[in-house]
Length: 128
Image 1 (cartoon, rainbow, N blue to C red):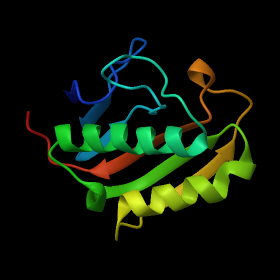
Image 2 (cartoon, rainbow, N blue to C red):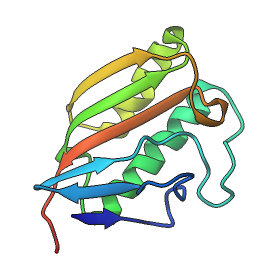
Image 3 (cartoon, rainbow, N blue to C red):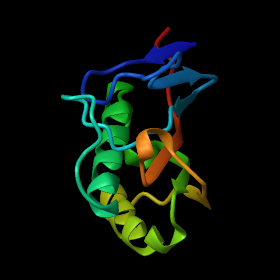
Image 4 (tube, rainbow, N blue to C red):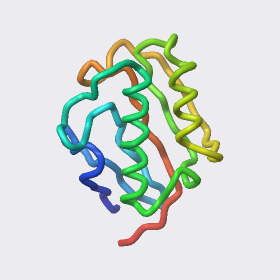
């Protein structure tokens, strides 16, 4: 197992890694809209939070030497399913031509009062 850590994504706020490469796959931790520079939630609505989440995920991918084309599955957790169209727009723009499988679920609450959290699984080569 190889742990993925980068200072361009938020530091883990608990006993977990930003990502782990195992058996040829990268498993990311769920990313919320924490600004890696401040450790605080970004100000703004669902659009601002989704932009930050996608930037955080990209940083984890890049730390593992990967990109969106390597992503095979994402899970999107929304506090309010009414936000889905806006999240979907930003998500699609961020991924470019990549089209991983995706699940989207509504949840009662997210860490730090977030409106969106996303995690991913990507193909990866182990460097250990």
